[in-house]
Image (cartoon, rainbow over all chains, first blue to last red; front, side, top):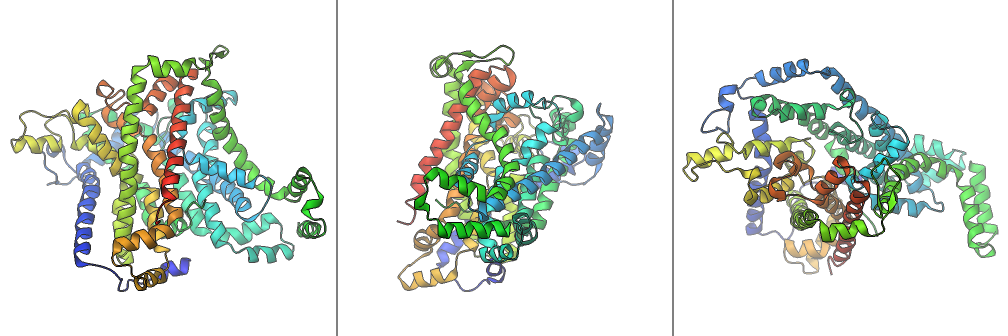
Amino acid sequence: MSKKLRTRKHTVVLNRSVGGDMGITFFLTIMGIFMFLPMLYVILQSLKPLDELWMFPPRFYVINPTLKNFSDLFSLMADSWVPFSRYIFNTVFISVTGTFGNLLLASMAAYALAKQKFPGRDIMFDMVVKSLMFTSTVTSIATFITMSILHWVDTYFAIIIPAFGYTLGLYLMKQFMETNVPDATLESARLDGASEFYAFWVIAMPMVKPAWLTLIIYSFQGLWNSGSSIYIYSEQLKTLNYAISQITAAGIARAGASAAATVVMMAVPILVFVISQSNIIETMGSSGMKD
Amino acid sequence: MSKKTEVANAGQAAVSRKDMTRLQWTLKEMKNNKTAYLMVAPFMIIFFVFTVIPVVLSVLLSFTSFNMLQMPKFLFLDNYIRLFLDDDIFITAVKNTLIFAVITGPTSYMLSLFIAWFINELSPKVRAVVTLIFYAPSIGGNVYLIWGTLFSSDAYGWVNGMLLNMGIINEPILWFFDKKYVMPLCIVVALWTSLGTAFLSFIAGLQGIDKSYYEAAAVDGIRNRWQELWYVTLPVMKPQLMFGAVLAITGSFGFGGIVTALAGFPSVEYSCWTITHHLDDYGGQRWEVGYSSAIAVLLFAMMIGANMLVHKILAKVGQ
């Protein structure tokens, strides 16, 4: 599968009309401009000096680019009541631990669901699939009750532990293992006396690198972008995204700094995607839902 | 472990399944697969505690009145009756949610599919760049806030500035704070951020299709790319189509965060108020847990219902 993806060449394709090609190119160009211009505009805004931000008529492009908005952003951060390093620590800590736990627990469960047969397996997986069909907003109030019973309200646990149970990662991992880890290899390892844990960790996991990279990215992205939460009210436990949204919310006076903040926040997930794109696409190859 | 597996295999061969009751068989199988349960347990426990139990709890609480301080009081269907007969804002929310879902769900789904299909024939390097351009808005954190700057209500917003400068309007339009424009604008922003995981899944699905199918189809008399799409491509990538549909539905019904960020909470005259907002209002702000649970249960039912419906429709693809 992976080999085929990589070696597939761009060759003459059948059944193509010139008119169709032109129409498609036109459509793609229009859509591409629609998608790209706002992204470009954020970056340009973040480079504009004050007089260009408040120019009439407003100009799309920047004439005298400056990094002053970024330095303003950092001085705003330095002035905040809770030290900004605390918000950064919170976001990094939550993202790293949550992602790591999700990776470990989800891939272990995915291995069992994909490669072992036991009563209850199909029901469990079916529930995981069903969970993709609704947003966590639906369960947030009831989860709050669970959190207060556990005394986890206003602790890191309230964010990190539920992240261990993110189902999209498990789903993608299980589907990928099913197609990419041959049963024969596992069977011969078992005959050689390997335990299931050994088969999972030493044999299966190295075969599914694209899938765990994808899981890490999804999990990390979700946690990195997490803002205010009803489970957290202490200022000291809040995230970078929340803190930055406070800067943005301060309104027009900080237009430059808030554009700079947006650029900083979006740069991380986009860079991560650029680096890992081919692995993610490879994982998505087996993401389909069979009936 | 291996010994156990061997014993299990031998056992299966010697004792036929018919010799046992279903329960006995299940128990035996469960015993043989202890490690499997050990491996799924950590994930499943967390999944149950934070996803499955909250769904069940929401259903139970939706029949009560509960404020987190006193014991819940059983009301039976009163919350639901109040929602439908006594809460005009909820009816507005349902209407807006349906408008959002019916427009953004299918549109983002079709866009994802067609763009993925169109870029499939580009060379790999170009395709990677184009993929990034289309995908980036969906992962860029809250980069959608830039639409608030572009469509800002004052003369310094880019769109207002342009229109004023060209003499098309005489005073700035309030865009996100004007009843006439806020809904279409939010739909546009939602579409802008909607080429996400489903889009990537479609790209991968298209790349995984064996080229010999197309050659065979051309021999069989497929004449143009549209027939090829309908009779070859879509049926082969049906699993991806299912997966994409699930994500599109979840995204379009759960819509709300973007509206709150751009148009405020509540949006002008509740013109963009969705069920998610209503849920936040009664759950996160007023702590009417029973009532908000009823809202959550209805939203949950709508999402699951839409999924079942789309599942049926997709079964017809390629026929």
